[in-house]
Amino acid sequence: MNIDIVCVGKLKEKYWSDALSEYSKRLGRYCNLAITELKEARLPDNASAADEENVKINEGKSILKSVSDDTYVIALDIAGKQQSSEQLAARIEKLAVDGKSRVSFVIGGSLGLSPEVLQRADYRLSFSPMTFPHQMMRVILLEQIYRSFKIIKNEAYHK
Image 1 (cartoon, one colour):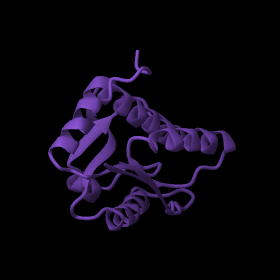
Image 2: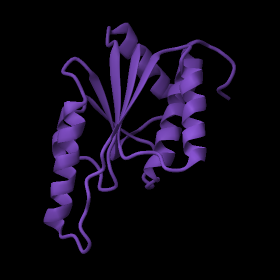
Image 3: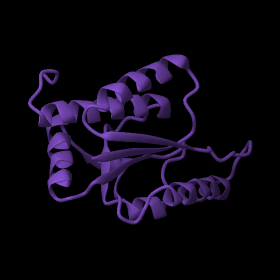
Image 4: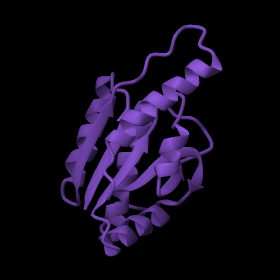
């Protein structure tokens, strides 16, 4: 299975990069992982609602260019459906059984995802009603994908 993480912004702190590297290495046994970091659109000081909407639209266009038509897209969205680790594992396993060889998880910028990206998504996933820093969310997502594969393979890790 090919897993793509499409995200807006770059990791800045070394500890996030180190954690990302560790989970990327672990996931290498289970899938082909690719991470696409897209440029974060600049938001002017004292931005209006229209300015914020333009940023979301521009970031959304970049996201949509990064996702091919045959990709199953899971958008991380605070308004999406919450799942347990076991449920996420079952979803990933079902996608593989159904022949979905490419799955993209999409993490938007600080303002969230554009309506166009949410419309393109095949599934909207929420990790919590809380808001997390994007760098942290990327690490949490990779850990949960890793945990999912461990659950699918019945390997020790998940408790």
